[in-house]
Each structure stands twice: as structure tokens, then as C-alpha cells.
Image (cartoon, rainbow, N blue to C red):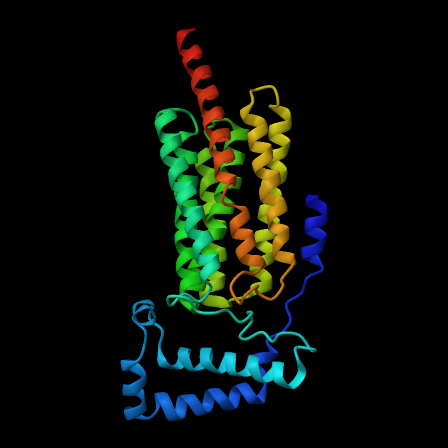
Length: 319
């Protein structure tokens, strides 16, 4: 399954598919709106006074509102002309979504919040059952904090899609995947390995280089995808190998394997890439929905392993 996942993503290339915003009809509409609404003081005042409070709170500007309005005007025009025979157009690399309460992608926002709640709740559950002094407890806690941060950034990004929020979303998501791999490597090395600090520094350097490249060199979607796929697949493979070697440790191992497999299969939803149902629910949102229950299994696996290590540690002290 993981090999198939790698092959599918290797065959995927970045293409310019946003023919909706590139159409002359849409471009003329946007230019007209920017000139006559945003550029005219009197009309801009009327627009600002009629702006919904939710759009004002989320920071929707006049230029963005022009692009949003023209997007739907273009969609309606394409439907009248061709009946979507050529497909529903994309705009600026994305499907058209209905803006709800100022949110660019409301379904993805909702499911990101659910993921945030799940991770936050399971972190509290983990902390109530595993002492902070237990082996690997601090590593798992740090991983949990990165996951919580990632879902906060995901919520912000899907609420307001800007260059800054996009970088935040991509960087925080990669940090979580990379941290999971780091925890796996540290677990394989052993909780008391003297080289843990060196390995952690190497992972920190890799993360810094990746984020610096995206933020200051070139924001390359293809490069970011390849790095995430390599790290993600390696992370899943190593955890599966480790779980196989420790299959007799207890029932928590099966929960960890199920969490890894569930997450791996959920990512395949991204390959569907269909136009959003009711202009709200798309494959990306479904992927976020599918990951909501994964922490329920993953943190139980982490807690079970920490408790075993703690028991082994106490037995060594007695000897």
C-alpha cells in the first residue's frame, strides 16, 4: 500500500489548471471591479459599509472580495455557455468554495477544529496517565504540541488563504510529520542513548532548511510535496517495522498499527480532487475529517509504550 502511495505521487506533476481565473471573462470582471469599486472612493465607502461583520473580522479586503464575486460570476457564465461540459473551472489553483462566515473553506475549517480538539483532548488524557519523568514522555508531549500547532495553523489557513497563512500551514504540518519520525528514531535508539541530542539537532537542521527554502528561496509546491511524501512514507514504514518487532509488547501495538494504516489510507483521499459538493465539501476536507479519530488510537499507543518503558526503568533501579 505504501509503495503504491509513493508511485502515485511520483507520477503526479504540478500543472497550471486554474483556467477559471486565467479566462478573459474573469480577468475583465476583476479589473472592472477593482477600478469601479475599490478605486472609486464613494463606491468603496458603500462597499465597506455593506461588508458583513464576519468578513470584516476575518480581514476580507476589497480586492479579495472582487476576486470572489467575479469567480462566481465566471462560474455562472461558464455554466450558461457550456453547461460545465469542459468541467468546473478552478481559480488560483483551487476549486470555487462558498464563503461562510468569512471562511474561505468552511468544511476544512470545521474538520481542522475537530482535529485540534481531538489532539488537545488526547494530550490531556496522555498527561493524566503517563508521568512527565517517564522515558519518551517528553518526546511524545513535544510531538503532541506540534500536532496542536499544525491544526491551529490549518484552521487559520482555511479561514484566510494568504501567502503567510499558507507558509504557516505547510511548515507546521511538516514539523508534525518530521517530529513523528524523530520520535520513532529516538525510540529505536533507546530512551537513554547518548546520541539523541545529535540526532535531534540533525532533524532540526533539516526542518530549518526546508522552511527557509519555502519562505525565502522559492515556494515550490512540487518540492514541498516530495519532501513530505518521503518523510511521511519513511515515518510510516519505520513505525510499522518497529511495531512488528515489538508485537508482543501489548495490545497498544495493534492500536498504533491501526492508526498508521488509517492515516496512510486517509491520505489517498487527496488523490480524488473532485469539485466540492454544494461548493463546500471537497476531497481535502474529507481527508481532514478522516484524520479526526486517528489520535484516539495513536495516543493510546504512545501511552502504552511509555508505561512499559517506565516499568522497565523501575525494575532496573531495583536491581
